Length: 332
Ligand code: SF4
Image (cartoon, rainbow, N blue to C red; front, side, top):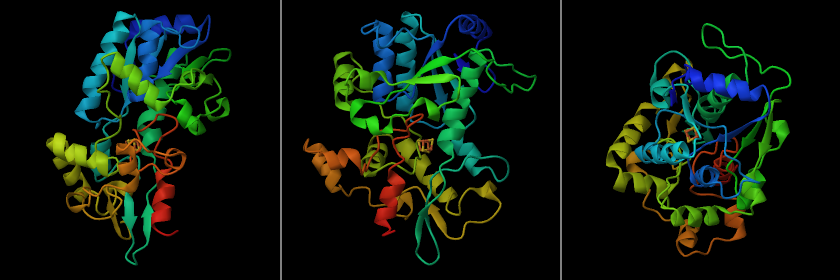
């Protein structure tokens, strides 16, 4: 079921509005990575109904330029969810690549790595997660909860007394990223079922492997500037068309987002080495990556510096720690 910033299927909209008039809706914010896929599968199988109910709906917000692996994987989620009678709504605000390169008009800033003429390293504001993921998801959510929709498709406020429980895919080992209700719109309660189940990212991976979903990809945009070397290498070696497109995009944003109006004072890059992606040292294996390969990740690795964050989490973007890392790298 696709909503391209029109609104979802009218029958579904009306059905969920009817339910919302009687009780809270149970909604999975589906990022389609390891953790939220685990929750989706547990919901579909009804394995732990006290913690993970059969959702009224799952919502995936599409930035328009994710890896084909993610789109293929979404098709699988949609299939097992449909078997369990759980609708999956895909919503999209637009295409992050097209918006980023358009010479005029609105865009949501990507966290491009920057280099000033004096050699100062910085990072641009990350507006993309909110613009392409959070806001579209909340717009659909408000519509399901009975908010008025005007002729232009603008969705207003949720009527008083209506609300939802929003389930997020944050595992116990990542619980520092867990949000509380105050970080959410007033109509939603947040629920972290994996934390309740003491599930870690690794135990989710094992669960998925045991359920023929072991090849679940990490969900994030093809050109995400937060990719580490491992992700870039996999793209170059396994999905050359995506790699070529990312390299071309990298060249195109060298002076920032064209629609910014004011030219960037310096240059911008996708790779944090701040060199063209096609020349970036992506074959360098970092010490953290080596420890990961050897199964020797320690608490410091898990809690602080993530070279290759596992995808773009909807509300608790797993990449939020990278700017700090970039700052450290820059000696800031
Ligand atoms: S994956 Fe990266 S580029 Fe895409 S929305 Fe998240 S932070 Fe932005």
